[in-house]
Length: 191
Image (cartoon, rainbow, N blue to C red; front, side, top):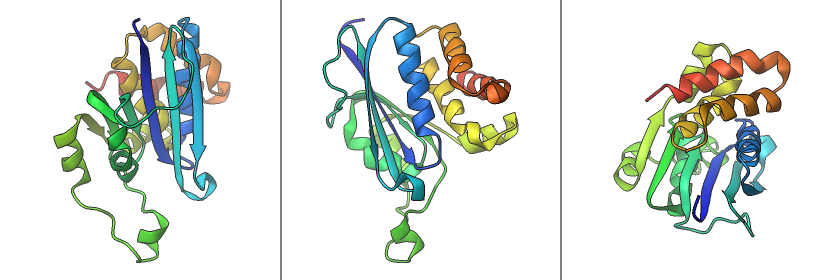
């Protein structure tokens, strides 16, 4: 692989973004890459923004991804996807869960949830939009929406399918392994 790959994972506290970044970090280590991960938490326990930078390649010196550098943005929530758009490089891929979680200013009535976000994103990026929450519900556990999204993203990497499965097996709790493997396959086979 030439250069580094930059992946930005964004969402809201409680959606499983940190487990997703752990799976991604572990799979690229398994593949022999150098990896740097940096997590930025807003008020993640209270539904605030969570942003994780994941950089991997032959040699990575810093985990920080600047604006216009992300190869892939994996977004767990629509507004967080929109906020992250400036980080996507030209020709980059954006994978979004179409779920809307209103931030506190919207809940309190001080602001309105922006309209037409998905349309704006599709005009600005190579976009894959899906209702990962619905897919997670269909596979048996709504908390697997993160692994559904990882499955979609995995299909857009050159990392072998089996490496993803092995990594999920080693990363998620054993009692939740079957439902997470189903969630991964549902995302991976979506396209």
